[in-house]
Image 1: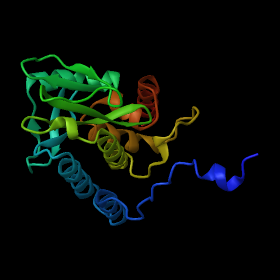
Image 2: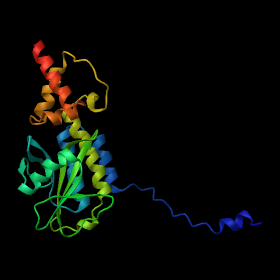
Image 3: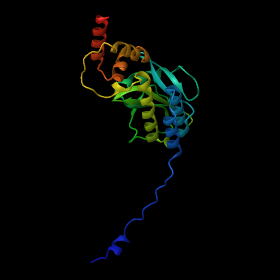
Image 4: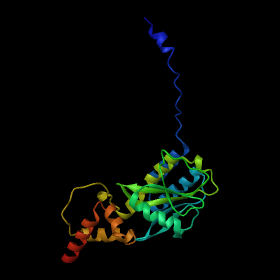
Length: 232
């Protein structure tokens, strides 16, 4: 019978785990801990995405109208930038499908991209990452891959930072954060109208997106609006 000491000799040596957190993790912690103005914090997180992915041009696309989007935040400092037709087309698809998309050189058609299966290549010129909360797309991270070593981008890190941005975008629309999680149907409250109107305004008039952020279905939102308008 083998002695325990002999058996232990066959075990693989345990690699030491670094006690030092990655620099980006310290940066995220600092941004969240010192968070005061959401817009500034979102811009800082966006710059962190650009820095850690080695990209110059990373932006956040938000609805400007039901079928048009603008670059409200951008790592280059440009605000309310305009996207190309190919990117606009991809964004329209993405807000419905919630899938990652990539646009390749010489093509105007976006292709589905599986971040934990597929690998980026030098032929990819734009990566679109949905910023999702409660299974709803609040915005899209648009990453210009031209001139970059796309295959070395840490997509798990991009996904994590995108989730932090999604939470901050959500609290901009619903500051009290109460309605962002699944809830059963509730009776219409008299004081809901201002919150609903504020959410619609911050979603650039997109009622479908406002409904998702408020934790409602579009039908529930329409019912509440009609009910509250009748009581005014």
